Length: 397
Image 1 (tube, rainbow, N blue to C red):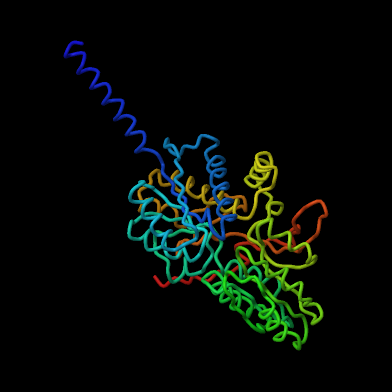
Image 2 (image 1 turned 120 degrees about the horizontal axis):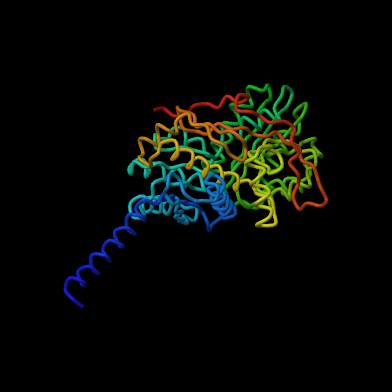
């Protein structure tokens, strides 16, 4: 080979390499931090499914935004705060993630917040719920598509609270449970209902005999309607355990928010129970949810679940934000996302400017039993719209 030809081959090879490197650099890299293994793995897997389907829907199948290919980088934090911090830092610093989404556990998400701030990169929190995330621990790089504890609590208080009702609460003893009850108490007071007792137990609790009896004792002599409201994530099944203790002998009813379909199997023993939910596949009526329900049924022979809708919503937020900002520059994204409206399977969401919490509808439901389904139906009572809930702004910045 002549020297000139040899040089041409080298130059040509370098050009191809540079083009490939340029294409790779132009990818839109989205990191998903989630508890793929651990106590909340069912939630995490739904989030990933929803995220991928959401990107597909939002890009009309192209999986590109503004000419950039979407690349999803997944990192399992096992629901552990220290692992989550390390995973998020790695995603930003080593993998070059433009935007991150996560995580499943509230405790892990709280650990992630300063990592986003240190790296000056956007973190869209989905599906962790603790109020502190968009409250006292918040920073300007944090947006949340998932609902917060106040949205859960206020919607449930609206559903079950009224004058003459006494409510006791049972929650897990960590950020999700304590923030949830704090918000619920505040919201319940505005309905005219009375809080009779509150109990907190470890997240690993499986025997609810002692705590159940304490709750029964706190309520049994109260006049009027008496309800135990349960806020729970993961295993343990406190509703079934409390129902086995026969609360009706004291005139006590049970209530809780929505949950994933496998957990709704336990609700079949509680026909007529009311509460409020973030999502149930058959409630929202809009084109986005119609597509999600139809496609999920085709692909998985099952309807989409609670956190599938959440992952889908996060994808819709990313595509809307990058399209609006025409960039993944952090400051341009923040400017685009503050006050941004975007479509989701639940309908419209809005990132509130003050704390970047996504304002969204919730759904008052009543349990109905369908013998043809393995889970209890969340029969809609009414949509609790954005304007129906005064969600407190809890950050101090």
